[in-house]
Length: 273
Image 1 (cartoon, helix red, strand yellow):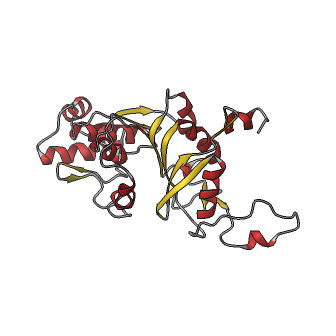
Image 2 (cartoon, one colour; image 1 turned 90 degrees about the horizontal axis):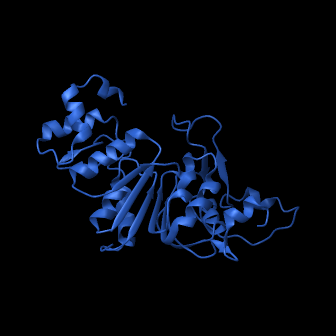
Image 3 (spheres, helix red, strand yellow; image 1 turned 120 degrees about the vertical axis):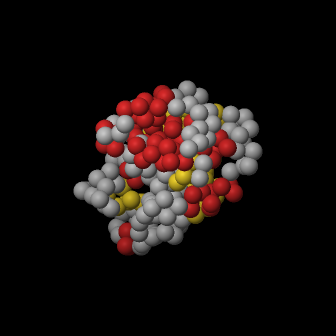
């Protein structure tokens, strides 16, 4: 339970938990938003912003402006999975384009409560589940769009997670990660001599920066790739990059996600890759 809720009026807490219809009173709506804790997604709920003072500005709308043209305006019949859905911004965008099913997963109850509340206020039928990225293979079936936004660098085992996620992609993966170091992606040769150490001095060579303690006061910022590493790992997991709409975001389709009918992850785990 968020600290703000502990001191709120009990009747308002009850209403905020059971509300299934939009709150029309802007003052009450603002109080409900505040009771749900600090928001990372700045949503517009009937004219009330959830994170108007976000340090990144109007986030994540500022990123969505670049990504949105890559997504069809009409998503009728589409199935969407949003991994690390946070407050639900991307789920809402996809549902508003007519997606048949939208499923958002996260491990943080605060974010899930915020996302459910936002969907209810906007009268959108969106599913939310508490589920780890490492458990995505438990979700039945595949999805036309899988969003993996702002999660990769928070993972201690990022490539393991990516290899799991690609199993859920039947159409497109929208992948975003924080980038540090070179922001210029570049493909390199397929092999190098053992004594070639010069490539590792090149700023565009694929690399990941490991954060032992904290970065930006966040102990969950573990691995920060440069742009070449982000693209290289996507290709290594069997994805083909089809678009790079902004410097931290790639849109991919499955190309070689399996070999002889088996997924790359399964082959790696049993030593046959």
